Length: 248
Image (cartoon, rainbow, N blue to C red; front, side, top):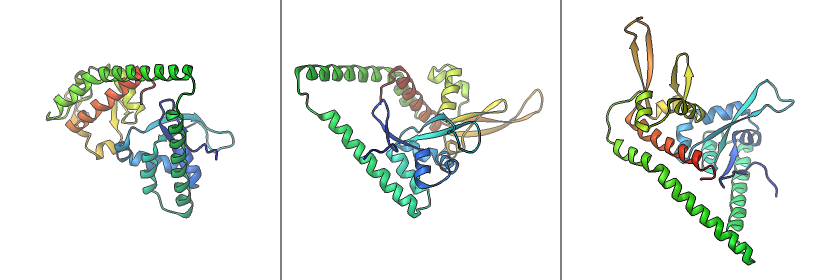
């Protein structure tokens, strides 16, 4: 059975999309992506949720592009728990779980099939050597960030954006792009504001203040110690993925 509701990414990860879930459950995509954003912190307990943009399909209502979420099997299963368990939703959930299972089996058969010729054996050995080298490079790349997390875990007090950049050794522009791409913070007026799920789970706190020069009231988002610990790990994974695009 050929199914397009589950896709294998270049890193070997199996994912579905919020668009596929909306179509299969006969729901508006806007309501499904809203659920993803509302419960993003919960979903990311099972890995980072990716977001991509594609041109709106011809014949669909509205203009502009469509932003959708890439969801692994754990993400999708948890997301269904936040949806009304209608007959259509229930049947599609069963179908999606089955397709994930079949795709995993197909991948396992490809990975573990024994080489039939000397050429295939040599290619397999070369591929394994490249994987080992890549894993070693990943470990080296993450060492500074892992050491930072371990040292900072007992820290007290919240930190501002620039303080966190300095602690991570991150370029401010690159770090802003990372926060925006991962839907952790977004630009609001002259400042940057965290998405509500990240505030709710204690990664940020909002400090109110008044400008000493203009008496203008403002709110400043600051990373909590928990947030610094978490963002250091996410930044480390991002750096590794950027350096090794095929890393899982």
